[in-house]
Structure formats: structure tokens, C-alpha cells
Image 1 (cartoon, rainbow, N blue to C red):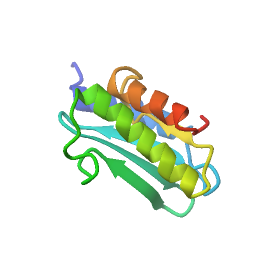
Image 2: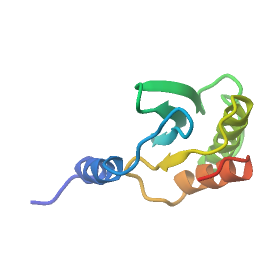
Image 3: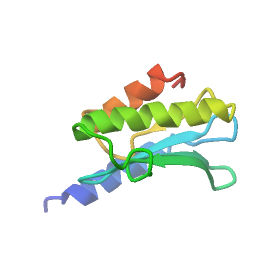
Length: 118
């Protein structure tokens, strides 16, 4: 029986999360993308806290012009700036079961350009 897209992504996500875990010094950069929006969070898995989050729904980016891929790059740069301001320079990247391609890759590349190391 064939898997649905959601079941396939969930299996990949479980496989990734067995390995990837964030700490306070090196949090997990989690990416979620819906059809229209993209979200990025820095998560400390030891305490279960979200340290900071940026999304394309934030007031700063709500009126952003461009394609979804260009907006993903803006979000990646914004999460990097917030992280560096909070004293976080290294993260663990969690693509959340999505392929490292398109918007997810743009966000990751922009976060690297913004100064995050992963």
C-alpha cells in the first residue's frame, strides 16, 4: 500500500529527529513550510523551550514582495540576525522531513550568510 505525502514526510521526520537534537548552546533550527508561509524556530530540546521564532506572517514580513523562495531567504536572514543578537552562533539544522531543496534550501543558505554555523 502506497504512503501518502504526509506519512512519507512523517517517517523521514522521525528518522531525522532520532539523530538531531538541540541544546541551549547549540539549538535546533526547525523549518516548517506550508503552501503559502514559512516558519523557522530555534528550539532547546533539553528543556523543551522555543528560544525564538520568525515566520512570514510576522508584521515585518507580511507585506514582503517576491516569490515564496525569496521570502524564505528573508526569513533565514532574519532568524540568523535574531540568533546572533541573542548570542547564538551555531545551530543544528532540522529540515523537518522536507527535501533540502527550494524554500528549505534558500532559508538555510540565507541563515548561513547571516552568520549561523551549521
